[in-house]
Amino acid sequence: MNYLPVSLNVNKKHVLIAGGGKAALEKLQMLRKFNCQVTVVGEELSSEIHLEIKKEITQSGCSHHLREFCRDDLEGVFLVYACNSDREINRFIKREANALGILVNTPDDPELCDFLTPALFSEGPMMVAVSSGGTDVRKTILWRNRIKQLFSDNGIKP
Image 1 (cartoon, rainbow, N blue to C red):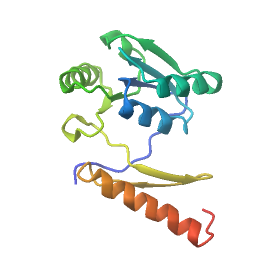
Image 2 (spheres, rainbow, N blue to C red):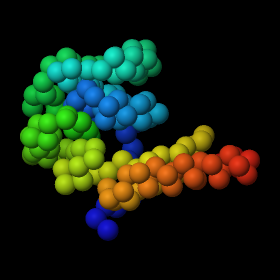
Image 3 (cartoon, rainbow, N blue to C red):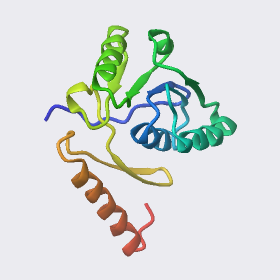
């Protein structure tokens, strides 16, 4: 195994999402569950991302920039999700972030990941995280959904 499962305290930490497509939307929706400040940077942002950002602005101060990523975007950032469709841009983001000691996740590209975000199921203060180490995302989601179903079928309240 290459990835150590940990729970990071992201309370009031700054998380950058670079990109504006489906992967960026999924990370933004996941991060909404946590008390962190999120900035989204992308040359194009989907309408779904714009809707999520509007929700977040009223809750926790989410911000966005409609432009390409630049090194200055990393100032004060704790974690980065490099979600561009262009692998070379993601590679550039990883190199720049790592030079500053910032960890990077590039969805669906374990080679460009310093950390993985597992499939999460949470209820109240309890959380279950499922990961395949980046080798089988579909199976990871299937396992997470089975765990969720187990709780609901048995009326178990975590």
